[in-house]
Structures are given as structure tokens and as C-alpha cells.
Image 1 (cartoon, rainbow, N blue to C red):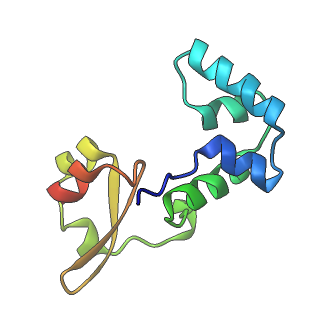
Image 2 (spheres, helix red, strand yellow; image 1 turned 30 degrees about the horizontal axis):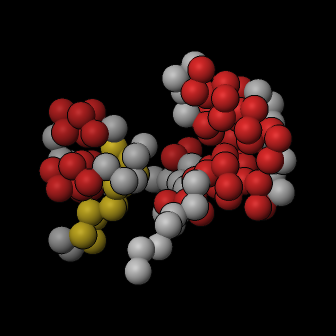
Length: 116
């Protein structure tokens, strides 16, 4: 059985953050301007960034991390090259034994995960 993952718009409508009408309008604008829904919802003033991050956190089942609130461990930062970090838009923040914790802009980028 295949489980269909909910989409961001559906999550935000179900949570009451936006109405279905707002979602539909934002989807049309996003498609017209070749942008993603989340950024479009923020630009249109329907949600703030915090609400977007909460929705994405739920969607990806990955915690949102505010980089201004964490300390990056030196050992972690030296675990990958700067070129690799830039290539995949990620930052290593913590290393425990053989486990490296990174923050990344796209938690579904499996190529980045494989490269790291």
C-alpha cells in the first residue's frame, strides 16, 4: 500500500493557517511566477515565515533549526569540505563519533546525504 504524503498547502489549510481559497490563489500565483508555494504564501502575506517553517517541519518530519540559536562544533565544521557544503547548501553542526549532524536547505536531497 502506498501512503500519499500530504502537500504543504493541504497541511496549512488543515491546520487553519490559511483558507482553501488562499491556498488556491497562492498556488496559481506560484505557478504563474515559477515559484514555490511556501515563499508565495509569505510574499502574499497569508502566513509568516514561522508558520511556513512549522508546516515544512511537519511535511518533512524534520525539525526546523534556527541557526542563530546554535553553536557549531569545530570538529563538525572540519568534517566536510567547504566546496561540498556550498554544493549542497548545508552546514555541519555537530559530530558524535561517526554521526555527523548537518542542517540543510533541502532535507530530501538524497544526493547531498550520499555525498556527505
